[in-house]
Length: 569
DNA sequence: GCCGTTTTCGGCCCGACTGTTTTCAGTCG
Image (cartoon, rainbow, N blue to C red; front, side, top):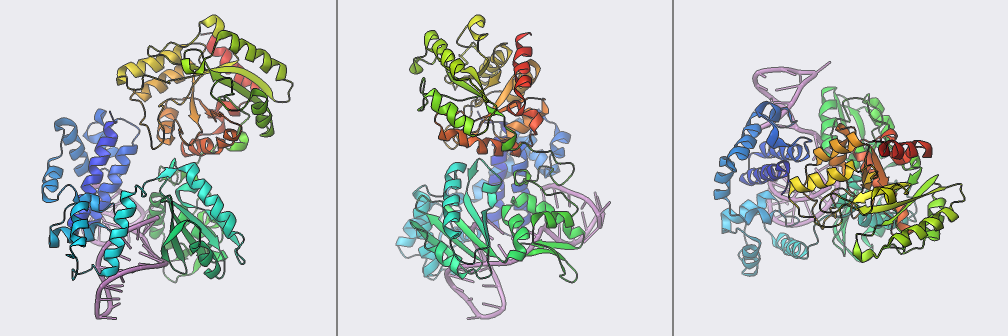
């Protein structure tokens, strides 16, 4: 079952949508949207909070707090129920059609009684929209196309790696255009969010024409809008890509503007309005006389606002404007990878190739952690594992130190594959849940805590076992797990594979509060996967992590001491 | 509905683009 925070967040969002459809309440709707986001992302379980504590959540006031309490005690929110009665359930789905917002949705309902996507399609086919104010032939055509796009499942979010590949390909192409002074990706991709809704590309050039022309001709894509400052396309796979072109002198302000997040920008803007300033994509200006104060670099603009440059991963309005910023962990801080596979189990590359590729990354240590024997499909045996250890020792000629480890299976009771004697011969171990995902929360929690208590388990791998956009996380009391991990000296993995990104930023922030240590690992099954670390680093940065909190940035001696001290418990 | 160095009322980011409009509303990010 989902956390109460997410359930209530979704209800508040529905409330916001319904409000925006009734019109004239735009600010109220926005307030509920903000509250919804704050509640979903709040670190504490809202079902454990009282009225006062609920009101402490930013953007949650008396009214929303009361609604949350009402939901927690009765299972529903009376005012929401009443609003639902006024609007057909399918009307909200109309807003998912690209180009169709709340105003048009409600017009379709009040004028023609349309309350679902099916009814809208039928009405268009019957010509009923002709003559309806605001619905000219072009609009109707766009709506039909929007329905097609939506029904093809082409409006959702994509993995960050998918978006990154598209962005890097387009940028490489547009770099060739004459007159392009700078070009980079911005938006949620630059902030390293786990999924990406659309790709924002920013370029600096005096004349935007050639860039826009070239971009509009991107193969296998359709143009959504095209103008001198902004052009949007949709790729065949349904990913929207926006290109903005600004003069080089506005680069910093524009990069800030298009990097967002929206919440960060709004918070920043609200503050500076009070100082008599205003910020747009063209620069920071004094409000009274429009004097340009800063624009060329992000550093300039933030500095003029009395702020340090804020790393994109922190720009989520989670307190980054309020005080000291952490020295975020960087990819160059990583001294090794502690979770990797070879073709002895389900990897595709032999040991020597993996080691060679890892050495090229400049690591000072590298752990081989093939699957353990209780995962039958991997056909692991004691003998195979011991033979691999000999191979690892033979290959270990430095300067990169090889660690022989394994990825253990946390069985349904919290036990792992081998006895203490066998386990004690590994240099380091990862333990992960690979089956029985749907245990009740209490059982799952105890299961993982028991693994943490095993003196030979050093890292819990992909804790929630979720697959991004595919499989939900397991149900467990993660705060209890983090408490146990911190107490036993067990690190929690940040699995860098873009399919997993497990744990994610929200959980990292919660884990941090318990004093947990982390390990950022590629979980590589091929040499190419070693380079996926960038996504794990992105997630760690979004979780405000510093180098000191990440065990694979530590020197080898300190890492070995971390393993050793747990075995003494 | 929420918030506060403009603090219990009055403002809430703001610009680009499209379509329909005859000066602007709606949508989007």
